[in-house]
Length: 220
View 1 (tube, helix red, strand yellow):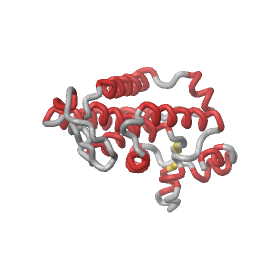
View 2 (cartoon, one colour):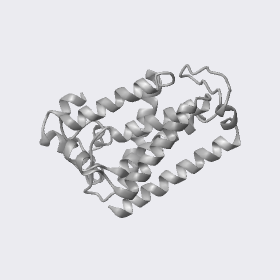
View 3 (cartoon, helix red, strand yellow):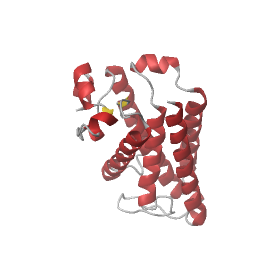
View 4 (tube, helix red, strand yellow):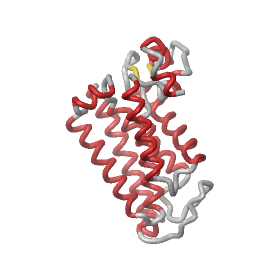
């Protein structure tokens, strides 16, 4: 579906992109979902599909098909809602990268909760990326490659969506296997994150995302 949309040209992209004025009062509610499927072009699509493959590989121990669907839907919902609230009515968004941020942060939280230190590296790297984007903006080469502007606000909203998805399932709790087949025991960092400290860290991360979202919205 994404490949077909990406290769269908500017007309279809304009009809499917997430744009506040078209959703409300325009009533084109499909844009809340379709905006995450449409891309600037083949290069933009290829980068996002490569990112998806990399995330699936890195998080193969925790990211089941069911988790992918749930976290993806929650992230997309948070991104769309945040975009409508924080961006001017005429601003538009396309691409899957923000949802990928949600999947990545969710996976990092799950790995840390089961005592895997690699999850902490994921979360630290993502925090550094978001901080760099807030301080320096997008690299010109990235803009040229994807064929359009990079939406840092959507990346923050996607990260927030992944945190919300983790919070809905108590994803920071150690040994929380839930329905996704993660049955590893309570060990290492997972023990420390199993109680109040984990909840506080999650709340601080959510607050930081909200602040960054307001920052990018004000700078737009």
